[in-house]
Amino acid sequence: MKAAAIIAAAGAGLRMQSKTRKQYICLAGVPVLARSVKLFLGRPDFDAVIIVIPTGEETEVKALLEPFCPLQELLFVEGGKTRKDSVKNGLTALPAKAGLVCIHDAARPLASAALLEKLLITAAEFGAAVPVIPLSDTVKEIDDEGFITATPPRDKMRLVQTPQVFRRNLIEKAYRQASKFVTDDASLVEMAGFKVKTVPGEQANFKITTSLDLALANQFLKGDLKF
Image (cartoon, rainbow, N blue to C red; front, side, top):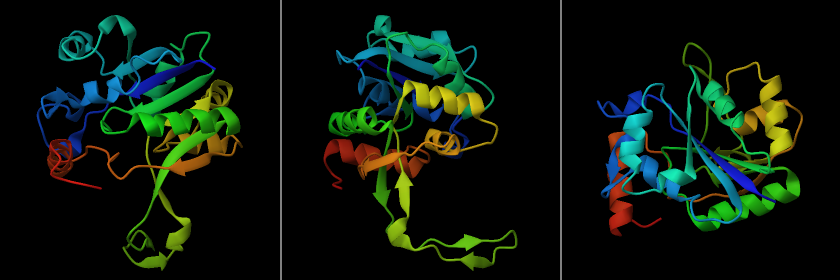
């Protein structure tokens, strides 16, 4: 079954507190976005790699990626007001033969090819697959005034990563029915009534959100940090 990737790269990245969008920042000499894109390049099972970018920045993004990625293998689509709108724009650009859709955060540049392979196999079998990692801290639910209202059992909780992989018909139906704000695509698939299978994620596959994350990623790539 052919697959296609949609890379959500239209976010502002405000928590990085940088004048440069976090997906454009260099990580060990390579832009974060280029590292995320390269996960999907050179694979015969992929029909397209779609990058959803900020409006008006196609020239800038192409110049950023050209030294690291073959531009002829990439398709650029402008994003929307929210991540959900941006991914929806990406879905409209899918090639006809793509039966699986991988949706990936541009700011997760350290996901491995082995993880992607597991997700593709699992999604082909179950319809939807996401990588998750266990929590190491206790989780508390709080009210609007900051008081604890519940302590969910930690052994049943997981942190969710990307790429998230779905059969095309599932994710397209989920987006057609989408009406609420969500923080990941699996949530929309769950709301549409489909089950989502989890696979073990990777500790190194963290999202570059702050300057500390960037420093940790640099240390990991230099071999100074192990997970």
